[in-house]
Image 1 (cartoon, rainbow, N blue to C red):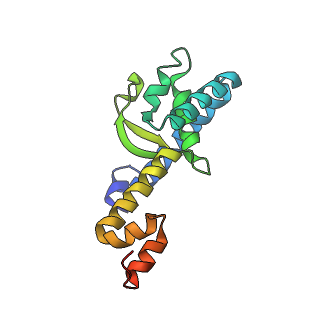
Image 2 (image 1 turned 135 degrees about the vertical axis):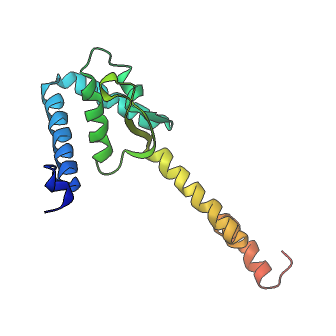
Length: 155
């Protein structure tokens, strides 16, 4: 018997699994109880936030649906975050503005197109830092100039 179970508490892994199961059950309840038109409207706002290229959180979406069950927005954001191909990526955390969450942290998201473009730019910058000549060759549209120079030509 471990110290955790000796005091009547389940092991951490079991408590975490139970917490995730309760979260998922709550998400399912909020989704199934909602008007499908509201779900579509929330999903449209999530899509709009992703297409903006800006970073956003459920707080931003929730503010647009003040009469909706506040848990439904989080459920829809989570669903969008799990869809494949990716629609959005988690990029940070921020405190929830929902009073019932007691200011716990929620994810900040960025739409896939903007996130992936930023990743490509960061990779290109890192490549240029490591090998400036190769980076220029990879982006130069006049590859023939480099062929001449590499062969000892004057360009």
